[in-house]
Every structure is written in structure tokens, then in C-alpha cells.
Amino acid sequence: MTSVVSCPHSPVCSGCKLIGIDYGQQLEEKLRAVSELFARSPLRSFEADSIRSITPSPNQAGYRNRVKLVPVRVRGQIRLGLYRAGSHKVVDIPGCPVQTDGINETVEIVRTAIERFNIPLYDEGTHTSDLRFVTVRQSSGTGEILIGLVTRTQHLPHADAITGYLMDHCSHVVGVVQNINTQKGNVIFGPMSRLLAGRDYLEETVCDVRIRLGITSFFQVNTAVAVRAYESILRNVTSESSGGSDMHGALVGEPPVAPQSVAAEDVTLLDLYAGVGTIGLVATRHVGWVYGIEESSEATELARVASRINGFYNIHFREGLVEENLPELFGDLCRQRVSGDRLVAIVNPPRKGVGATVADLLLEVEPARIAYLSCEPNTLLRDILRFEAGGYRVVHVELFDMFPQTEQVETLAVLHR
Image (tube, rainbow, N blue to C red; front, side, top):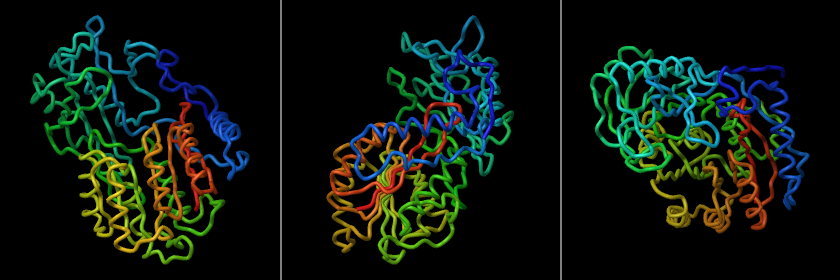
């Protein structure tokens, strides 16, 4: 696979450290890096040279469905961009090649609106003034665009004027949302949002399932590759095949064989760190019951709404930390006489991984299979070593290039008890 993407902002913008390198070479490097990491580890149940598959991105440019930018004024000009590596100086990135065309067009209209209405921009040194971040996301399924304006307080000067301008001038925009972040530091979103115009969500379609996303919702930035990852997860946790060798064979929508010859309708799936419920919602047609746990109240509510609009009644979502909700959920499943051989668990944690507490809770209930999707191979390896020590074996590892032009890679590890 030969493809080279160029960028006028590189290397000043360091967001895409591999840009300008042949895409086939990027894939080989990512595969080599994860293989070497596993080879250096004490992992016993899986050979590092068995990691032979990395699913490429269909699009090496224009794939990114969401952007979060810092607005600053420099000599009277508006910059909307990212912090330069190792500093808090903002690099302006108009026309970013990895973002969708719709996002790039919307960002420029937001820039014009900031200039036109002279919106006061946040000063991180003094923790004063108003607009801190701008976020734009676009649905690959519907084309809908949602704009988020993150402010220091609820006050946003000329809010009606700027909102009206954005709704009138941005193609496919369905809503403008204000998020309030009163805290110092670089955390982007605060706990409270309010709708300024339109609606506070957009709709995405994943494997023929309608998903709703807000401005703060976690969702993979590369929808096409995310679909491939979810397909592989379902094949590996709902099929007796342990190797997953036919990487693009059975797609979502085909009836799977349940683990250990248990009928599909008797399988219960745990979707941990569920976000807006995407993986669990896609899985509902393949198992008897799905239970999702998600910390974010906004994401949990969006997941519940999505289950209703899709007509899925065999899925339930709990709001709160995974480590706090799992014991109660396990108690409920025990009372329903759901044994470990009827359980499969899917975990998609943040970069810090699941950690010892959640891993030990899963080891207590012993689900038949665990699928662990991670954007950080080091914490993934740390956690699966703990699972291995508890009696699991790693049967499959596969990479997904969710982030072309960057050094990041998504890794799926499938474990059997």
C-alpha cells in the first residue's frame, strides 16, 4: 500500500508525526512496535510473531470526524489550532488534511464569526475572559455537524449573534452547544453544557445502528476503522473460532455461534467503559442481554436514547465508575443464575487501562471471553498480564490503524478462560 499525505503545517504542528511517510511504511512500523513490545514482555500464552494483522484505514486523509481547537489572538489575527509540542503556543491549522472537509469548512466559519463579533478569548495565564476551546464533530453516516463552544463561565458575549451566524452559514450544522469549564488547566470540557441553537446531538450510523453523539461524547475518530474493529470484536467473542483468521469474513449482521456452544440468546455481554453505548448497541442482535457501564451521565443518557430509537430492549446502561458498579451488577447476574461461561466482557478503557481493581473484579466472575480494545499498548499489556496470571490465555491480537499519519494505533486483544 503506497500513499503519501503532505501537510503545509508540518513540522510546526506536530499532531501528525508520520505525515509525509509512505502509508505502507507507517503500517509496518506500527505492527513492528507492538510486536516488539509483546516480545519483550513475560506474556506466556501468546507469541509476539503471531501479531501479523493490522487493518488499514480506507482513508489516510480526511478521516478524522472530530476536532478540538484552541482559539487565540496573535497580533490581531485569530488562530484556531493546537499547542506546539512542549509549549503553549498555538499553531494555526487551517485546512488540516486529516480532518473531514466539512469540519475544515466549519472551522473557518467559526474563525470568521469570532472575528466578526469580536468574541473575547480566554487567557490561561490570568484565567480571565471567555472562549476557551472550539470543538466540531461530523457524522460520516449522515453528514450532520455539531459545534461546541467551551467557555470559562456561562457568559458568552454576543451568544445569539454568533449562534445565528453559525447556524446560517455552516452547511449540515444541526446544533451549537456551549460547554462551561470553570477550572484552570488544559482539561477541555466542564461538567455542564447548554443548548444555544438547534439540537445538542448528531446522529451517526454504525453497523446499521443509529448512535447519538454530543459534543463531549467519546467516539472513535475514524468511523470506518471503528466499524472494522467492532466487527472483529463480535466475531471473536461470539464465535467458537479463537484465531480470527478470516479478518474480513463474517460481517456484523450474520448470526454468530455463542461461546462454548451456549445458545446466543443465553449469552450476556458486559460493555465496560461503554461511552454512548456503540459496541453494546451493535452487539444486541447477537446475544441475549447487554449491560453497559459508563461514567459520563451525558453519554449514558445518549446510550439509553439510542437503545429506544433502535428498538432494542435487551440492553441496559448503568451510570457510574466501572469499579463501583461491577459488584452490584455481578450480584444481579448471580441472582439470575448467569454463570461465567455465559458471560463475555468487552472493555474499551481510556489510555490508563482498566487497572488492578477492575481486572480483579472480572477475574472473580470469570467471563468466558474478554475482548480488550485499547489505544495504549503499554497499559493493555500490563492488564492482560494480570488476566493471564488469573487463568486467561491470549488467543488473538489484532491492530487497527485508527489514526493514520500519527504514531498511535488501536490494539484488540482477545482472551479466553
